[in-house]
Structures are given as structure tokens and as C-alpha cells.
Image (cartoon, rainbow, N blue to C red):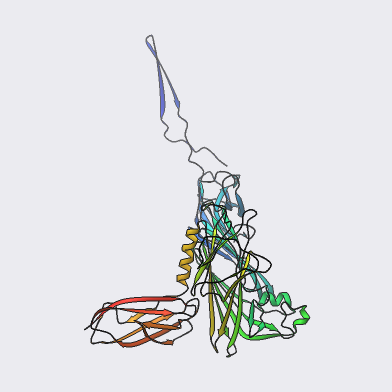
Length: 521
């Protein structure tokens, strides 16, 4: 309820009327102006990420309000004035002494955008009203929906927000990274890029181990009478970066090598393939990239042959047409055909660009460009025989005895093709860390020609580097763990000042280098 505060010192205005020999004086009080109604949420503050992975999580809300506010409704709002989308978080929270506080369940935004602005609205104020006087933080609500059998997770669907974007992803056995959206200042989606990246399920032979079709947990659930648990975890940072991991054994049917099995009974019992799958996914703080890092590990101390098909699907707009620009090819964006095979791909990490509508002008907010970057070139890139919007990245990998094979994909998107291309270039560079020279130190003076160089390399998307050279001399690599190795090399160098350059190469043909300057005397 609003009320007019008591007036303290109020100035008087005087009107004097001169007539004859008398003076008539009149005075009145100027109206007082009350302070405007306001609220401010102070906790949480800034841009905050909340994770809802089941279990009815809660979070604390507190703030201040003007004296005329007695209760507030806490809401999450999105969209421009006049078309605001809102979700009620808490109702009729009392205000006492100019402050309010409550503990509320994390709002379920799975039916809409996972990003909203938290506001405390005085009772009677609608979200569609002008609410600029009611300030609050932006919330990223990461929501996980699990498909479970008792305590075992078999599949999941994630919606998440971060920075200026939002995503929807699923497990690798389903349509993986399925959408990315860019947000406007009012947190409404300006463009949504639909499609799958990193899908390892749903087609014949997507994963084959030693010639047998392998099943991930969602496929086990769909095609057999059995279940296979999916190990799953999520981690969110306050600044919005999200990381998730999923792991499962790759299984196969004992009764048939037909995919999918003609019936649940045709599968027979489930057998292990001797290979386990592990994925680490990251949604970056800027909201423009999803990074997928996959590893396939021998779980039976034997070596195995893998054949993989990573599905990439793009949803065309109601009007217009998709455009594809493949690395190593000129001429901008082109249409695609069913059964088309793309050749001449670079022998290293590279990016294919997918324009949501190749006929739109650059900068049109209704269209965007997706950059799909791989850590190593596929053996074959082929469009579906039935659908020209779907292509597969086909790989043949060897899993060493007691070892691991690795691959990486990054999905980026932007309104401008130039920005998407830059994001793809950055993603390609991120597939492999540069080597580090630990000795000699930069600027060191070495006595004599004999030069010993030592250093450290770390695993990238394709695993540990397969070789390191220093000034053309091959170094000896010694793994010290799954993600780290040391190297050393000794050679003669001429006297004087010169540069030492360490070059690391990985299994995907990527090269990264580090240089220092030293002097031999």
C-alpha cells in the first residue's frame, strides 16, 4: 500500500496584492513529492548460475525495498516490455524494516529460456509493467532431466544458459548438442540454431567395436530388455561455465549383429566389448561454444578396432535454405545433396561452416552461422542417403592395449559468418596445447655446443602428442600419466645466439610450437 510520508520543512510561496493603502498577503504549501517505489535484490548478486539436477534444490534471496512496499513477489522475467515471459519464484514475501529475505526452490525453466532476470515486484505490479525500478541479477538455470531405472541413470537432457547464450544437449547416445541460441539484452532469443553435433547413436554402425555394433545406454534401453547405467556428473561455476561428464561401457548383443535388433529378444544377452566411453562437455562462459572431448579406453587390457560415425544434423528454416562451407573448398556457402561425399579435407583440425539460411544477408538477426570444428579429419564426410541436412563424420581408430583413443568436437555459433569463422579457428587451436620448454631457461647461456632440452607436453583432444622435435631433432617422450608426458633431447648447436623451437605433433596431424632464445659460448 502506498502512502504519503509526513512533511517536515516545506517552503511557502507568497502572493502580495497591492491595493490602496492595504496589503493582502496569501500563502500556500507546495506539494511534497514522495520517493519513487523501488526494490533491489542483493543476494544473489551479479550473474549467477544455479543447477537443478533433481533433489529440490533451493537458494537464498534477499534485498531492500522503499518504505511504501510491504510485500514482494519474486519472479524471473525475460523478453521486452509488453511481451514479457515470467516465472513466479516466491509469492507475498514480507518486507520489514526496508528489507526482505526468503529461501525458494530453484525455478523450473525447462519449458522456456534457461536464462532470466530475477526481480522483486511489489504486490499488484505485473511483470509486463515497466519494472526498471526493480533491479536484480541475471540467473542461468541449468536443468537436468534424467531417464532412470531405479537409481541408475540411462539418459539425460540438459538445458543451460551462460553469458549471452543458451543450449540444449543430450547424452551421446541420443541427438547430442541439439541447439544453441544467442540472447538479446532483454534475454530473449534472437536466433536459435537447431541441430545435433556429436551424436553417436541412432544409426546403423554409429559405433562398431571389432566389427560388432556397440550400444550406448539409451540404445540399450530402446532396443533390448536390459539396461546399462550412465555415470553422469555436472559442475557449474558462478560465472556461468558448465562442465558435464558422462561415462558408460560399450555393450553389444550376443544374438545378432543387426542394428537395431529386430526385437528385444533377438538381441540375446548383453556382452561387453572391452571398450568404455567417456565424454567431457563444456559450455563456455560467453555462451557461444560447446566443446566435446571423447575418449575410448580399453577396459580388458586388449587392443580394439573402432569405427565411429559422428552425426551432424542441421534444421533448415521454414523459408530459405541451409548453406555449407567446407574447409579446403572455396566459393562460400553451397547447398547439399543426399548421398554427397566431401573430399579434399585438410589433414589437421578444421572447421565446417553451416549457415542457417544461405540467402540471408550477413548481420540479419534471424539467421546465423554455426562452426563445427573437429580435432582430426574424418576418413570420410558423407551426407545421408535420405536427408541432405544430415552428414556423418566417419572415423577408424585403434584403441591400444591398456590405452585410449581420443577425439574432439567443438560447436560454435554467431550472427556473422566472420565471427563464427574466428570462433572455429580458436577452437581448432584449442584442440592441442603447445609444448613447454622447462630447460634451458629463456635467455640462458650454455657452455659449449652440447645442448640438452627438456620439457613437458599435455594431452589435447587427440590425446598426448605422438612426437616432439627440437630444432629438427626428435626428442624422447615419456608419459607420466594419461594427460602429461615429459620429453628430452641432446644435440650440438653452433656457438652464438640462436632460437630453440620445440614442435609437438598429435595423432590428428596438428602441430604446436614454442620457442625461446639462448646463447652457446
